[in-house]
Amino acid sequence: MMKSIQKITLLLAVISSMQLMAQSQSELIGRWDLTISSGDQELPGWMEVEFSGNSTLVGRFMNVVGSARPIAEVIEDENLFSFSIPAQWIGTQDLVVKGTRDGDRLSGHLLTPTGDAMSFTGVRAPVLFREAPKKWTKPVALFNGKDLSGWKAQNNPSKNQWEAVDGVLSSPRSGVNLMTEKTYDDFKLHIEFKYPEHSNSGIFLRGRYEVQVEDDYGKHTNSHYIGGVYGLLEPNQNAGKPAGEWQTYDITLVGRTVSVVLNGKEVISNALIAGITGGALDSDEAAPGPILLQGDHGPIQYRNITISVPKE
Image (cartoon, rainbow, N blue to C red; front, top):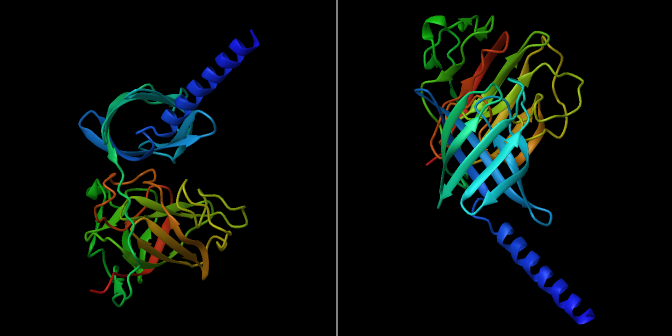
């Protein structure tokens, strides 16, 4: 009797081990760039899946707006997967995602916290590992201080509130976002900014990764606060100044590796940006993209904007 019990126990352990190995080798593990369809709109999203503990797939999901949210458990049954996430900023019900993996492609549907049904497709996110350039070009001004030459509204150009005043690129009120007409791959960006109390903006690198610009003086560090890559990378210190003072960012982006210097202090050093952030233009991470300035969260001013690119 004892030997039979031992055999059954051993068999169960082997089965459990095989299940664990299968789960840990799931083809769903990795990062995925998503395209979410809503009516005639195609919107960006992102998902990451990883193995955790004894038998669980977990991850993060970035919907069209907000920040990357943790997934407590991804349920996988062969090529089918599903999960749910509590609402963040909009709506009250859980976000529910159900999809199918076919090789390196995903497809499926999601139900938003506001009850809207959408479909999505996805592809594996590119690695984007590149060696840092040995030399960079001399900085080139992106803003001439006189007008909006080289810049355009993200949408609704007739409602563009941005203006050039005395060498300052100013958004006096909430309105549309502004972005460069040119696109960039790897670069070094210098930019100075100033905001009134409680205001909020952001600088989107390649139009996809938001470095936060917000009145967070004196607060603890957080990926959603000044110096952070929104919802993904937390700065090592809060180097922000009080509202009403000019501040400086020096940002280097190579592939998906970023370094952020805020007011002379390196708050993020050669860190990997896992995926796009909320408000991104698209999820095509391998493509060059513009420098985008957020103008829909309150008054903001920018000046002395220059960029350097790898020297050939």
